Length: 361
Image (cartoon, rainbow, N blue to C red):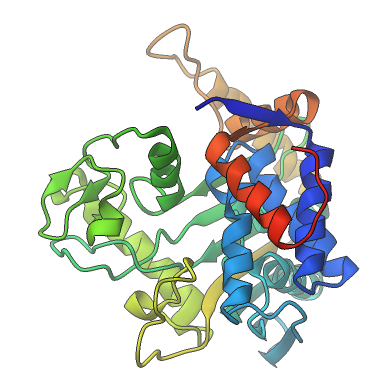
């Protein structure tokens, strides 16, 4: 099925209307729209408007509070725990990241763990909030348990992404935004829409056998940690995902491991959950708490330029810096529009009809 191209402002209007219809106030609907569509702009289609219907289903299942009372429930001068009151993670996460930034302004660094939240979109949006303050930003979240630890066939962890955003001077910022699995669940969803298989090493069936079925999660299968198997260092991906889970959920009081709330609203909530909702973790570090910001950014420019000039294996594939592909996508899509798969358009049409939203598809 072919993709249809939509202008950013068209999708912005539709997304805002949807969030407004489910009860978000103007400020929250505007912010949730900006955070969600930042994924589409940056080429991370799995976490953008394709997920809009999923957020609405969570709201319909009374798992999302559209008008949350987001608040700090514990803090020190440089740390805090935020209770998201079951709000959209798209709104809760920027609140918490701003708390980290504000604490860093006063203390040099700020660290915030979040409980009682929901899926927060792409990790990169929140980490990048620190850049305009000459700070290094960090963002991570736990997620639905779909990932088996090394040597296991049981779902115990989420795709648990990490993002670190580092400012530079004349060069664009360094932005490393990645899942701790070989592939994020959203990439399986994209392959499902295209009716294509996965590469070997992304997933296993419920018995622990390597397969290439993009629908295997619906049949009890699992995603694999970064590295795929022990011989390719999957224990490192497993460790990274575990760190995210502990920082985001054990530290904050959210539910962790196999008890993390699932994103699909039709999946039953785990029994005997040890915490509240999903958890996130954010960090902000003032560069000038370590060395003068201009000096640091000059050397970041030097670092970036040297790595860009690293000898390539193939002349037609130069070395890239983390954040380069996403920035290129954003420039191109702001100019030429965002492509949506026909199945996503179908979902959006049904959503608009259900919520009585007038939109020209």
